[in-house]
Length: 360
Image (cartoon, rainbow, N blue to C red; front, top):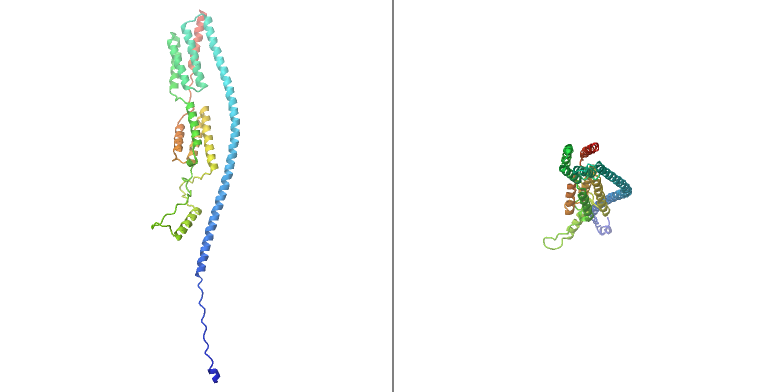
């Protein structure tokens, strides 16, 4: 080795660069994945809500079409009922005219017989009252009016000195007792009560409809609480509350053992009121026609609609529920007895007196 080689500088080893840390990138990736998952879940929930809204709109359109058809059919039915009532009124007028002619004929026969005693006039008056009683009961379904006419006829027969009216009074007593055993139906009062119920339905506001009381309802976000020191919460606490509120709106937990009641839109609110009004009007029609099954079925449907669509804690809803419960206990079609036998017996007695007078 030469001297020149010995004088060269000693080589210096280069330091290896330090390896960069990569864990912050993994944390960011995990946070991004969680955000994507939450966003996908939120989009899925929004899609389900959109599909549910579309189905609800289709159902409302179908219900609206059915209601329009119902109103059209109902108008036709009302015209038919009016025509039937006019025909029935004409037949009743003809029946009254026939009865009046029969009474006039009986009166003329009494005058022509020459036996114009006070008893004959009392029997004729009693016959007229018995005809009125039968008309009130069979045509007008008026139990009170029929009972008053029978009692008045019995008082008239009491004043007569004819022993032959004993079978008539005996049968008349049975018919009076049968009518007293029937609970009178106040159809006017029931009709007016149902009209008042319909008015109360129109007065119900949207606050009476089920909204916040429905299971699964998500209310407004709660106001932020003030920290213990009296200052505003920190950024981290506010971010956590915002994330929690968003998660509660995306994921809704419902109990399976509770009935889920729908949240009502303005269209559904109008539909609920109109549907309940139609049920109560159907009950009014049943009262006027004396149809007990239709009356009970209409009130049952109205009660179910109130329970499903309205908040029972509302005072107006509670009053409406109590009124419907009281109306349910009423009987609008009691069984009516036959009160025509006493009239037949009195006719036979009058015919016998007339034959006896003509023979003499």
